[in-house]
Image 1 (cartoon, rainbow, N blue to C red):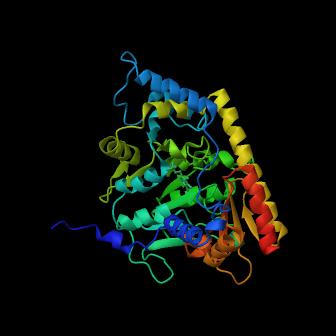
Image 2 (cartoon, helix red, strand yellow):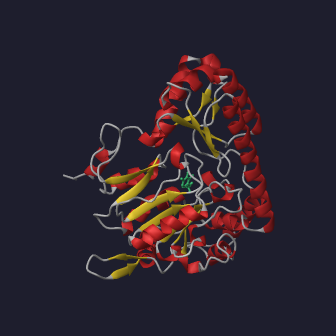
Image 3 (cartoon, rainbow, N blue to C red):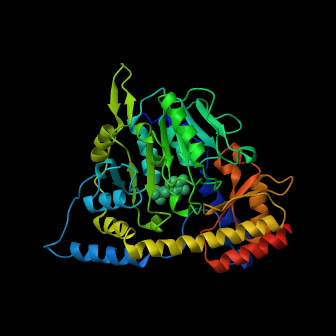
Length: 410
Ligand SMILES: *Cc1c(COP(=O)(O)O)cnc(C)c1O
């Protein structure tokens, strides 16, 4: 008899996006004439093609693989030196990170989930609410929570409320926690943390011997030069933080798959017996045991994102999406809805019209405007009463969505 991991049974049925897909499919089946009008602003996936520099580099990488002299089999599990060095020299330039503190992977979703492998049982874990659901569900699977209550809150987790009053940036807790997930720019709310706010988090982590898991997947969308792009811009973060980065949202690699984790050698955890162990060392062991490296052509493509042409092309992509975000913000504000985010992030976070829940608004937008949004409550009970519109779309689609929102709510 094979015993299953019973923690999985605690998961709330229906991960958010399958439920959205189910409702969209059901609507399309019931309304075939309107089905082709549907515009998807729900899932956080990019829509524009890859930067040309990445495509060229990927082609060149494939050509090398096609030739006996340049063929490559397994690469280093931690990633090719050329990519790790390009990361250290570009987004992490001047931040005191060395190439061997960078671990290349095939995605930040897996990295943010897998990182729990190196942490033991009994840690008190803080997550913001609303939140990227992966942080919560992977802790449930790992057995770090109790059961969910009627609101969907799991026992044992410390929920940090994010709301209009705190600008959707969680305050440091009054109690002790061991691990904190922070995501800036934020998915789903589009909020960013100021230097002062991040300094408060690093000070909290150091005072509490806690670890910050910092998800910077949307770093490229930051427009305001005063907003830190990396947690390692904050003094002391090298002692208490791990950062997750991805090529998904800057280079549009959601279908290509490449990401990385930065773990300074100076971050450590307790062995429970008074000793300290380097998290870098543990992750290195974990990564080389359970992962065999990202694809060579993909790593070539990722490195090309940091070339001069690559940077210019990524900047153009970001400009495109941020232009969309501005239009969406303005359209929602014009009909009197409370609007957050969308300034340093590709997500616009909008308060529902009075009296409508997040799923009510989802159904209304789908059935009356054929626009798919993401219900805020899908990101946690703190998201109730809000919805997320993604700026990942063509300009024509965004303009049409703006017209429909104004016709529907205005
Ligand atoms: C999109 C996204 C990522 C990136 O995930 P990949 O697996 O690298 O595609 C990471 N964190 C958040 C919050 C995201 O929305």
